[in-house]
Image (cartoon, rainbow, N blue to C red; front, side, top):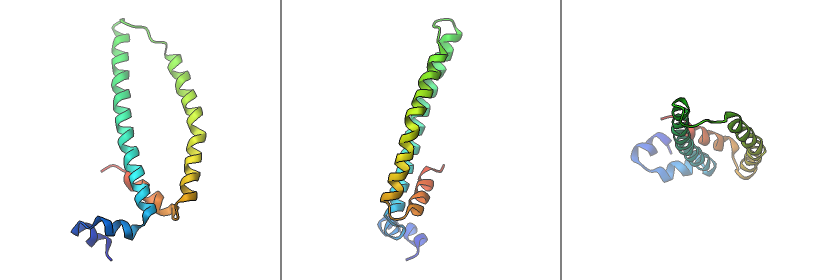
Length: 110
């Protein structure tokens, strides 16, 4: 089975079977994560632009050190969990290399 021929004919099920379940899981997680990050970055960017404009015009006063403390606390909380996620993925998928490749392809720019 030739993967390129499978894509051309539109037989995605055969391609997934050829690449393996680990690749499929990695690809879908990467695609979903990329979509989620794009949404979060857009919303947070728009929010910060509004905050900057309001502070620049003197309508509000923002204590940016509190934002830094919240951000540092979030990073401290999420760091151990990301390591656990990596261990879970590598332990439960039969082919971590294919899962990593799928994650890479799902996350990359179009």
